[in-house]
Image (cartoon, rainbow, N blue to C red; front, top):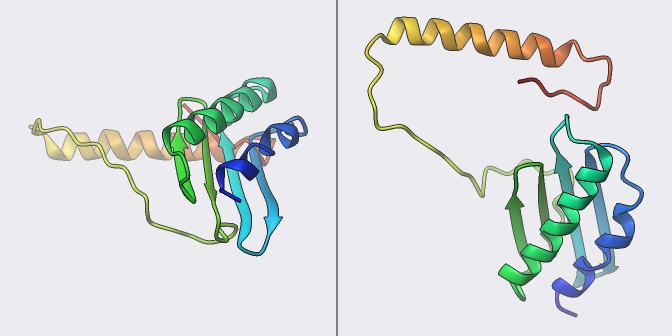
Length: 136
């Protein structure tokens, strides 16, 4: 059984999502797929479900017959694999962006960046909903 076949079963399970995190396993032994879905904290459940379902369709079309795939989208992230991915911290795949422009006032830049990160951290941590740790 190809991994893309069990990934199709995610659609029926997506109905039960009522907040932004989801994990799913289907199949057994060597014919098993594990999936993790994550949506931004400010995304409504129906938008989250739609994003994850669209991601499922795109990943199986763009990565046919692949045993592992990950897609990052504006509202969500979907990852699936034929190996265990639950509770495992992984550094790959990774994605970096850079800016070739130089910062002319490094100390001022670091001060502003530090203040921004502190404010975002406090704002995200003060949320009453422990599932929604998101700030802009």
